[in-house]
Image (tube, rainbow, N blue to C red; front, side, top):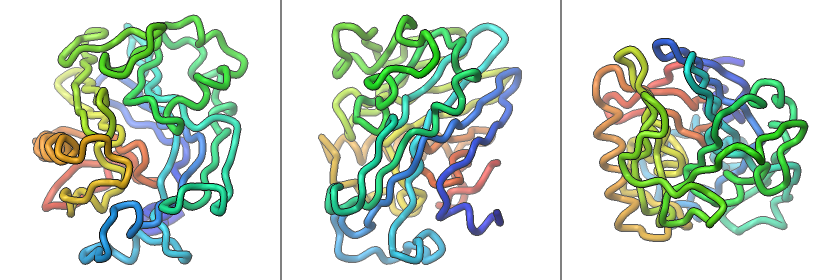
Length: 259
């Protein structure tokens, strides 16, 4: 696959290193985003044609991040699970929605110490709800932002350090309890920002909210703070839905591919 093709392709299994940590994106599936409906605007000036599929959709990947360090291992988000929706069965702003890929990686994530969620929409909780295949992950702590965590989860406070070098950061807007995660290892940083942004389009046009924002004003604030942080030297971001360009940095108002 060429670098240009990755902007419209669903993510594949990719791994980066961050100090002594190994960070892998484990793909579960994909979702098609109809750009005008998704962003609730008639005009998308500035959207690069290279980001659109031949049928006019933006590609959103669905998957999990596996963070493995010498001291702890966590999984962030749980994909969509073993199911799929055709375009005609989905929301008008969406196209095809598929999951199931995480079942191929059970050996990689079977030993995690905790499962963390950016938020509790079904494309981030799928396997946790369906039952983790071939593992005992149901017995591991499950964590989400305190504003939306069910009683069986650990509710995370803003700034809470779960493990050394892993901090939960409140980033509300898409949901009330939406949470980002900052990983710091040997002087390097990775910010996992979940659905603060769904597409690289929003790096150049941060005023664009998705049609599913619970609190649009808070979404704009969280996105501005996220983009400001991602522009710092040496900070990498992980966009969970960013096609096959999940890992990147922000420079000159654009998403710059890191891996």
